[in-house]
Image (cartoon, rainbow, N blue to C red; front, side):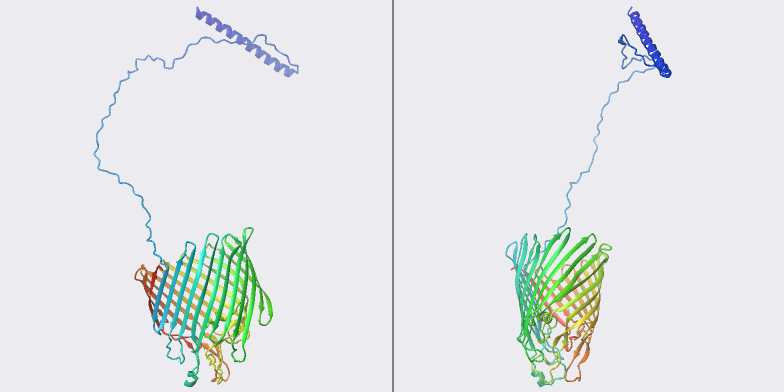
Length: 582
């Protein structure tokens, strides 16, 4: 009965759906026809809405029962674990971190002293100590002495020399600035022993060839870490000799750095004052005096662009001659640039620079101690020094530097032999055995080459050579300046105890002007070139104690560094050094 009712309901629902579908289909065709025929639209009102009902349906089982004679019955399987012990002798090692081997800390000492003695009754003494006051302050003292009692066979006068200096300085450094103040005194004794071989024994006995120099200096330096004023230095020096020659010098220099965009602008200031007096000139007629005040302003702009570095600067210099009330103004270029063409292997560079240099008696004596105190000092005007070169490395351990330059200097000082005062010589330097200073305008063309090789940490080698060509305006030649120089330097370390080194110097021919009683007119002479071969060997007996040996002029060539001034032959110096804490 229920099945009959359900079937009847289903038929009735299907009839309704079919009727509505036919009505919709007829409406669609009618709308299409009207649209094609161009007639208007018609509104269809549905009187009764569609009201579907849900009938009861059978639920589908998830796991239907399958009745099949081929289906087999599942068998029940029981699982069991059978453990068998395995014998093993492997025992894992405990891990341990590997650390870097630390080099033993070097034991440092704040003081040392070394003493060496040798032939020609030579003595060499060096002593130094640095006392730490606290973390930021220290006090340093150093002493140096070098002397020889002479003994050259072919020299008729006393050829001994004596050079002693004592220096002290107080230093302070913190996070904001560092400064130091110190002083030095120096005593030097030399002899004008280079007389020509034309004098009698009586004349030689009457020559007072001794000359002595005394120097006293005060120096100061200050630097700032966080200030536009970066550094400043001051030097005050008194220099005199035993013949009433006196010279005073005061020099102050300061540098400031000012930021300009991303570049660095440096402004330097300098004041250099020099005055001196000579008891006599070479003709022994009257006193001489000189004085110069040089004031300099040096602006400079450094431009850094990747591999290119450019420095654009100039020097504005004002010189006032205090003795003659004369003054001059100079402008010098200070321009240079370098470019890393191939990283550190090829670096070309070039530039042009100029300066007004204060010629002074003290510096000239350090170059040539046989100078006579008979000529006033005039500043040298280096108009320009133009240079071009290339430097870098060929290999990681082989560096080089090739450079060419052209220099034009006015009033350049040159050493030239003094003439003999025949029959009128009364002072020790008037026998043709001293040198004077002449000034000339000189142009110099120079070519230099340098190579440095580091074979390993224990062996290094350096080689350098220079060739010069001079063009003088008034003098016949650039007196006593070599046309060729060269040098070879070697250093070798064997283990922790032994160290050895050697250096070889070559100085080419020089020209000088000689005038004495045997000549009708002054004569240009050539001073021979020479090699000077030196070697050194040291052995560290213990941490504080060491021994060393120095061999100088091994070729035993008593060459003349200056005309008629031969040097000592083969020299041997043996000594010891000792480090300690004071």
